[in-house]
Amino acid sequence: MNHPPIVAIVGATGAVGVEFLRCLEERNFPLAELRLFASARSAGKHMTFRGQSLVVHELTEQSFSGVDIALFSAGGSLSKKFGPIAAKAGAVVIDNSSAFRMNPDVPLIVPEINPQEINNHKGIIANPNCSTIIAIVPLWPLHKINRITRIIAATYQAASGAGAAAMQELLDATKAALNGQEYPPTVLPHPYAFNVFSHNASVDLQTGYNEEEIKMVKETRKIFGDPDIRISATCVRVPVLRAHCESLTVEFMSPIQADQVRDILSHAPGVKVVDQREKNYFPMPRDASGQGDILVGRIRNDLSDPTGRSIALFVAGDQLLKGAALNAVQIAELLVAKN
Image (cartoon, rainbow, N blue to C red):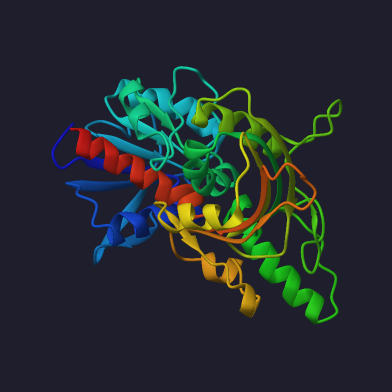
């Protein structure tokens, strides 16, 4: 790897691609050159990075010559096609899609949890699903002290999880609704303004679980290195622009108290405790948006568990940042530090 590296962003004009640029700039990521790639439709556009205007180029099989790190956020089909091409050209691919996450030869990394897995990459590293990251960053420090045996999650997922087009659809649909106008959805399957509906991922007709829910189950087990954790999730799309929230009920191996959880999380990396009972002030999307920490609150013992081994939490995290771009850039920082 060059020192500093040449970095490429694939999907530079998308919602996560824009955040890649922001994270690289705000974190003063050491790079020799930044190259931007997107579809032919976006080729020729200009984007600003560190005060300079960079041209977006069309992604081709020849795009990765000399590239050391390639940050991908262009969808699973493009990742499957171009990820191996980039890796063969000598780049380390950090992919934000689901294309490689469950491949046993591809590390699935959250830097606060399993940074050591970076040593096992073979040219491609997977970035976990946003809902998985937002849940497990605060759960990991608890799991290390008192093993988690079961997680029941309910998500409240923002438009940002479905990309820039979904965010625009929410804005346009809301304006139309306020003006008493119809707005037929084109990006998401149901009317979005003032509405809540099951996550738009495809549903397994046999189990009734959708792909987003299964991702949370499988990815958590892989990242924690614990295939025996019992996990159930219900993923829901809500009319919020960015930052997902999740309600988590967590069962531990041994009894645990809310005050102990609060103390552990107050010292956990990537976590900020927002748990002001007296003010009824807890994690909200508006506070989570635009910053990198996972906000955690509503910390309380689960009254339905007489054994005292269960805790209820409410978390919020920026899907475009820690749920996507920031986590990938943190992985890239591990690569640079390693070399």
